Image (cartoon, rainbow, N blue to C red; front, side, top):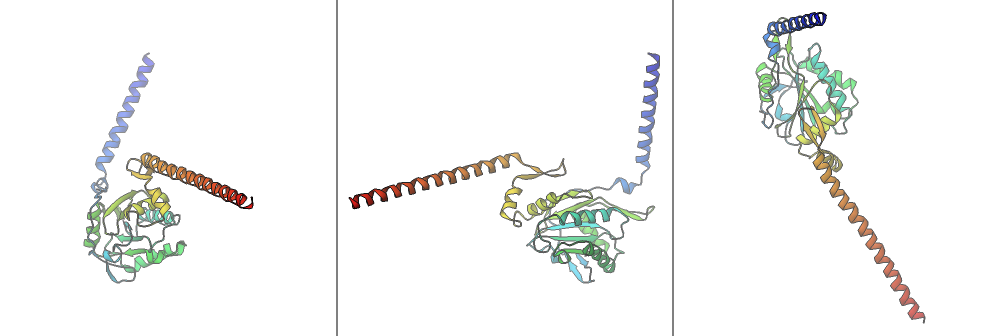
Length: 283
């Protein structure tokens, strides 16, 4: 009994020590690292007149890419990011390569550098990297890499609730890994988190942002069967709509079957009537 008591006491001491150490580590972490977050502003509209420079050095605004005819995947990061931004960019590039929606025609991607020291030359280089790696048709026109003054990137970040900070000791920005989906009018529709994105989430998110105005009829039916689950961080099947659509399809199928049966019976009676008339004439 005493032996087990000793073990329990030692385990408690170790647990308290680890917990205290972890608490101290958190408390001693840079303030900037503790403040990284995304404060979701779903339903808000971002200012489309914010000025930037595109990868060719031309003056543009967000309105040049968000102008009422297609949804937008918005990515905030920076082009010299040592790791996280590249992983997010790679995740988007990989996901859209598996989505049958066409960039530039059905949706737009806009990457914005949060580093005001990065100019259009670096944006050009970054874009070329992904154009060389991708075989997605229309991606050159459908993925813009923007740069600009700090007040511009900060204005977009504040609009979507994207919190980031410069960490002097690490000589890099600390920021969350997230992409934001905008409606064709610039309304914040959805946030997708992480460095890997499910192609189905990208597609359904874009269709949702576009209010079902892109994709095929089958795609729109599929969209109605899914809803976004914040806890799962993904689109999941909405059982109620699946059952409702299943019921409608059942009624349609039964109706078509009964219609075919009635049409067959009508033709059979017509042939029988014509045959009787023919026999009477011959008699």
